[in-house]
Amino acid sequence: MRADTVADAPAGNWVDRYAPAFLRPFLRLSRADRPIGGWLLMWPCWWSAALVALDRNRAFPDPWHLVLLFVGAFVMRGAGCTLNDLVDRHIDAAVERTRSRPIPSGQVSAPAAAAWLVLQALVGLAVVAQFNLFTVCLGIASLAVVAIYPFMKRITSWPQAVLGVAFSWGALMGWAAAAGSLGWSPLLLFAGSILWVIGYDTIYACQDREDDAIVGVRSTALLFGEHARLAVAGFYAGCVLLFALSLTFVDASPFSFLGLACFAVHLLWQVIRFDHEDGARCLRIFRSNRDAGAIFFAGLVVDCLWQWMFSV
Image 1 (tube, rainbow, N blue to C red):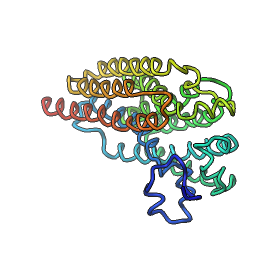
Image 2: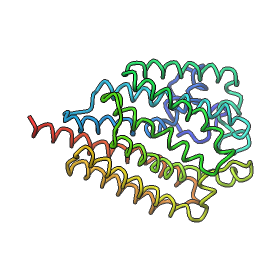
Image 3: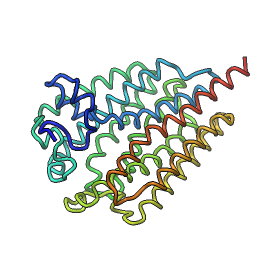
Image 4: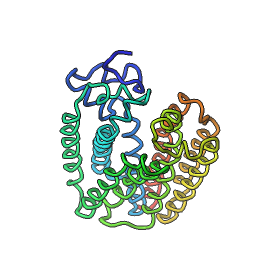
């Protein structure tokens, strides 16, 4: 592995191949070379935008909102990763998988990383400012969760739950951006998404169980141990149930429920394939949640078009 690359980044990623040399360390700090986190942060936003479109009998979620939510998700994911790496730089230096990250490896200094964090936060604020006042306030409120997350692994075995709140906040944002308020459907979507995140991040955390135990970092992967598969299955089942309840509040048609059923089958496949002792497999399963999110979104979009066509 080259000295300036990151161990857990895919080989031949676009940052290593095409980004200007001076930007590469900062893009790695934002995980631009590992964009899966941006997708996982974005899907609850887009699901919520599709739900409110269903509720208002629109043929498609607002395209401009989808663009803003896409940009905001990836920018704020980058900001969150930068903050996390600043706080965890000493822990990362002691863990095999993370010691090659930009700060512990010396690619980026802590002050430079802090400046990069501020820049990303300002871009995120500019994106949120395009929405109504209620959504702006909702977006600003999410920063409190983002700020405390890096410290949770030191004080609780449930840092995945805090990450779940942070990564599911978009389930509120997409609806609020169009409606200027909240309702039962986005709240249930938010709750279900939290369970989804806890499930997939437990799978992800299984990669670092041994190192985490040595350095004193806590996680649901360590908490559940040999019972991790059963725990993930429970979180995923609760997620699907809450999503189904969310759909009932917008009078969703069978197309949405079909999308949810396919989403559930994908989650079942993950549980069957999951082996908490196989780090490489855990990473592959974790990354597959990008596809799970796309499946559910596709069902919602088809439902929007179907109901709109037969209402005009």
